[in-house]
Amino acid sequence: MRRENTPATAVRTDYLTFFAAGEELGVPILRVREILGLDPTALTRVPSAPACVRGVINLRGSVVPVIDLAVQLGQPACVVSKLTCVVVVEVAVEGVLTVMGLMVDAVNQTMELGTDEVDTAPSFGTIARAEYLHGMANAGKKFVLLLDIDRVLSPDELHGARGVHEAEAIDG
Picture 1 (cartoon, one colour):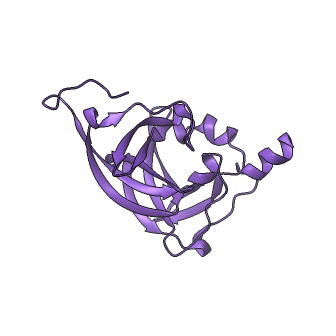
Picture 2 (cartoon, rainbow, N blue to C red):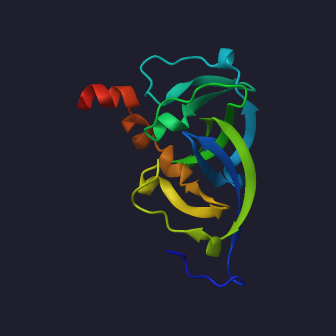
């Protein structure tokens, strides 16, 4: 269902889009600090971290957790390739901006969208739970899923995340 706004009053927002778990996803570009090529040797594993936390990196003297976005969305872990990137984002955690990295398969493009171009996401049929989505936007033949990054990376969601294999072991 399309949101009702007239083009004259529609607020426009730029989004960075990227691929994770075979889907194109997007976050507001104002939340993106930088994009890094993934150097797997720079990742330090953290014992007892949730399954979605691939490790931490040293970003100019700051410790930044790197979240495997595919795992956080309940999909198999990202397979590292030469296109794999870490999208460094700012997330509001209890009202404080916190820096985190998103491990994604590849960065794709930037899109400028008006509120009138963002559709309500369906409650089924996407790789992300409906509460993780701000909406979706038409990108040619497919849709880009626009993430509510604060919700996806909230402490409650990160600690509640479990890997696909863990879920299968528990459920099966």
